[in-house]
Each structure stands twice: as C-alpha cells, then as structure tokens.
Image (cartoon, rainbow, N blue to C red; front, side):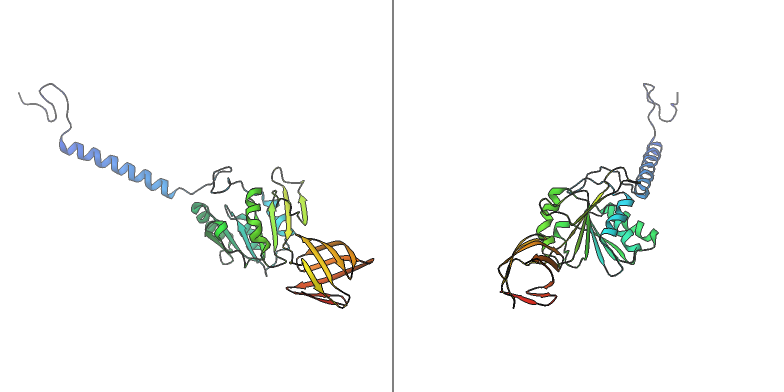
Length: 273
C-alpha cells in the first residue's frame, strides 16, 4: 500500500523537506518583522531609569523656566546642560534665542533630544553631544544648568570655579556643599516635586594682597565671601558677584570691578602683588 507523503511505517507524520523549508522561512520572516518593529518603535524614556552617574528624572517644565529666568539667559548666552536627558532645558534655552548644548551619556536620549529640537524648530541653536560630562570642555559656557546629585556637583565644583568669573550655574534641587548658593527659589504653584532652583555665580579670585594709594588691601576669600582689611581698617560684608566686589571699610561701602590682577574702585585702583 502506498503511504501518504510524510507518513512513516509507524504512522508518524514527518513534514517533507519543502514543508520544513516553508516553515523555517515563515519563522524567519516573523522574526525579521518583529525586529523591524522594535527598531522603528520610538524611544520613550522612563522616569527613574538608570544612567551613568544618576538616574534620569525629568525637570518640571516650570522649573526649567525658573532656572533660566534666574540665570537671566539672553540670546548672547551659550548654555550647557549637563546630563541633558530628553533635551527640554536645551530646547527651552534655544527658544529664548540662546545657543545651547546638551551633554548626555545615553545615545538614545541624544537621538530623542535632537528629534525634540527639530520638532520645536530650534535645531539650529540646540545641539546635543553623546559624552561624559566629566570629560567635556565647559570653558565656553556662560550658563550651566544641571540636575545631578550633590556628590556629582561637588566633583564638578573645582572645574566650575576655574571658569570665567560671572558664569552662572543653576541646579535643580541639589547643592554645592559649603559653596552657598547666591540665590535659591522654590516654586509653590504648578509644581509638585523637584521644585527648587539654586543659582551660583562664579566669583573672581581676589584672595591675597593688593597695593593701592589708600594702602594695602589684604583679602581672604571663601568662594563669594570676602574678609580682610583696607588700609588697616577691617572689611565687613565683603561679597563677590562674578567680577563685582562690594565691601564696607571704615564705615564706607566700597565697590570695585576685578579684572585678573587689577581692581577698579569708584575712586581708587589696586594691583595684586
């Protein structure tokens, strides 16, 4: 008796070679289709997802606006956002006319940020780099924004303090240890978490002895706070805001602009010895 195709003497069905090939091709096609779908599915980050140094949590848009307000961002600024995530801070700064760059270690986030900038119509001013923030040159920035942990801020602090005096640094929520913020603002409306912005202004370096017609000015500096003497008279309320120094000596309030090793007061000059 002639056996049906694929039937053994024991009655077990075995697919003929052509049928097995067709089945294998079908499986391969389904795998290719699934892979293609996975590749074309838009990347969507999740709050709390792991990153290189910190987990990603988006900064509320209202706080992004507040941070840029505090830094007084203008079209003349170059803003760098460290750990730029989905790019919202960079895009917002670019909408204000500033040039802005996001530094982000996650390449998927970088690609998403570029898409967001294009959709917002600011890709000419908003750029993103896939890089380690600790290895990135920050020297051209006039404003730095960040939402990092305190220990990361502290690790970055020496590099930040070497930047040009007057550079503005704005952080979402986290501090710089004993470098006190120049300004702190907490939002109470339309914000439920991560609602505090802190601003620092990189101070000029004034510690040391300065020669002036009024006598030596001897200054001690702790970040933006300054103490010392002017012509032997104790200085009080000394404070730097970038290159601008104010203090009181002998009952008189003094203001001066620091430019490297020279200092110009209202009616006096001083040179660093």
